[in-house]
Amino acid sequence: MSKEFSFMTISELSGLIQSKTVSPVELVESVLRNVERLEPQINAFVTITADLALDAARKAEKAVMTGETAGALLGIPMTVKDLITVKDVRCTFGSNTMSDNVAMADAVAVERIKAAGACIIGKTTTTEFGCKPSSTSPVSGVTRNPWNLDRTTGGSSSGGAAGVCAGIVPAALGTDGGGSIRIPSAFCGLFGIKAQFGRVPIFPPSATPTLAHVGPLTRTVRDGAIVLNTIAGFDARDPGSVSEPVPDFLAACDVPVDGISIAWSPTLGYARPNPEIVDVASKAVAGLKKLGCQVTMVDKVLDDPIKIWMAEFYAGVGTRLKETMAKERDILDPAVAGVLVHALDQTIDDYYTKVFERYALREKMREFFENYDLLVSPTLPVEAFDAIADIPDELSDMNIVSWMAYPYWVNLIGAPAASVPCGFTKAGLPVGLQIVSRINRDVDLFRVAAAFEAAYPWAGKKPPVH
Image 1: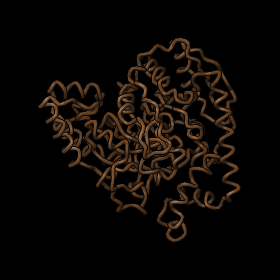
Image 2: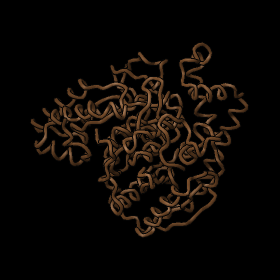
Image 3: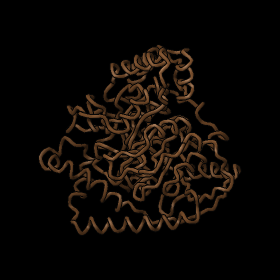
Image 4: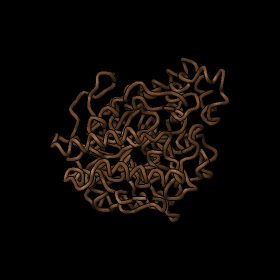
């Protein structure tokens, strides 16, 4: 079965398509063969949309042959997380409560990738309603990491990460309400970004509307820029949508990094990372310094805001699932049901106390970024752990979210954040470096990430399963 297009970038595939060297139909058929070959091992998909992909490929082929103006993703195979709606396609949200749900409309980001010519290969796995940063779901079972099939991909954009990591597609759409793009990107050795809150409009509304983002997972920084430029931009259906013009993220990849001010914090002041993770990340930060960035060590950045995040995230999901919790709790993932109980028990006073604490955190971090352009840390405190576990053994005293430590605080302030591959552990598992920018300075993430990628390339490293 063909693997000839595996691990090619969007730019490479676009060049082949535009030069008529490769037919979009041929490309999609090859990708579908790879899905058939790899899916039994990695379990990345909930629903495969072969007809949808082939129909888009035929339209792309016609556009190329007739010389029509090409969209940025014309003929490019992509996947969409099963929390994001694709019209007339099943959307389960990773839950048995929605196992027969068929979406009535495309999400905004899906409308945009379709308009740009993308061929959607399928809907990818997610933990139930995106509630866990691991890779198990009541609907789809266990999604496995191509670097080691016994290990988790992380979540909740589990299947999207697995598919890109294994070379099936060059890009996936994921969601990020507390790290769900950055976590699997770190565990799978990918570039993943959540842009400024509202940069990519979200409609239909998320269950966690003040935290949720849609963004790309890719093998290269420039592929991430191409997808983000496609899906970003104002949409009146999302009241939080950013109305300013979309920056040119691809062009930002070529802007020098000299003089960028970076705060490097191995723990943020509360994380409990494995020393090996800190060692790998520290070497990457030393590399950024060699590239011309000004790096300052900051031990304590903030106090752990996990209670603020949980109050907001699980209150939203819990409200959506309140009736199910009361009548059919046994059909939910036990780990998810366990945290929803506490969210639904909070009083209005408890909830709004956390809301005001969140505003205080936003102001604290706004002041912090008056002194730095970027804040850099490990993306996660550990390497990928057991695929069927929700919490790594070494942090077993923590809950299903607090163990990860680094990603969720960023969603509370809405700032742009990315995970960049920065090395491997002794066990051969990827390590991610989290880069957070000032509000509305997504371009700085691309500047630094692209410069780091050029100096220390990672995309050529392929996992054992591909």
